Image (cartoon, rainbow, N blue to C red; front, side):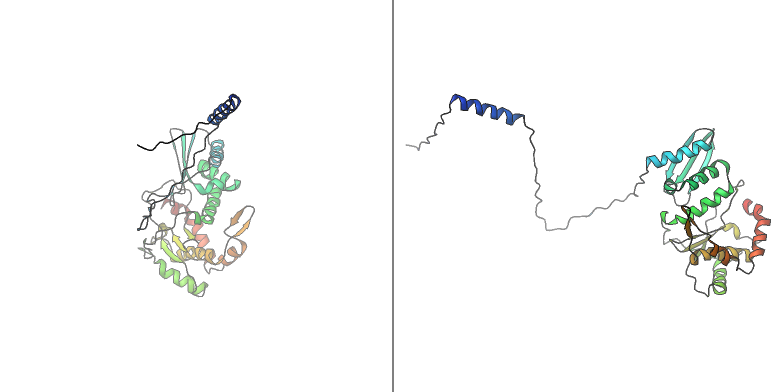
Length: 284
């Protein structure tokens, strides 16, 4: 005969049965916490690392964007549409279409001091020259926030009328003992002609890239070589004379800079020539 299994019977009193019933009811109403433990399988190969191919997204602080938007609306009579960008080449662009002001501004202006935000509004709405100069200084100061120049982009120094590299070496030898370590190139020529241009940035220096850019409009026969040399000298000074900080912003042309700028042998001649031909430069 087969084996028999004897199961003992538990005797419970009526009071004990009631207590067990209440305990089961309470347990059924308590929140249950589930814990899952994942144990990876053994693998003899290295896991493949997948990197994102898309460019990183730009996250904009909405409160800062609204603050800049309010400044523009207070200066412009009409609706304003503001875009915040991370564009390296078009730091500020604006136009009015059917009475609506469209503005694209680099994200560096979101945390700019109030004086720079006011200058941005004056420049966009009224084309203020002093505001444009202040914005230019602020952009130079924050050049490290722009995307780096691609290393495979060639430097263009030989122009149709002026050779920047030749001028660079002569100025470096004459004023800096031949110890300058910056790069130099002509900037990109604009694809469209701006007949209404009110300001022009003849040169710039990027400390991030150690790169001097000279505006291509200076590569013309009627522009004297000594004036191009003065602009190159001015940008070279930015490498050897750092800006000074004060009043919430960096002064890119401190007293030492201006004093050394006047050491250029044809300084007065160059300044006089620029004042006499600024309108022609703006139309070029």
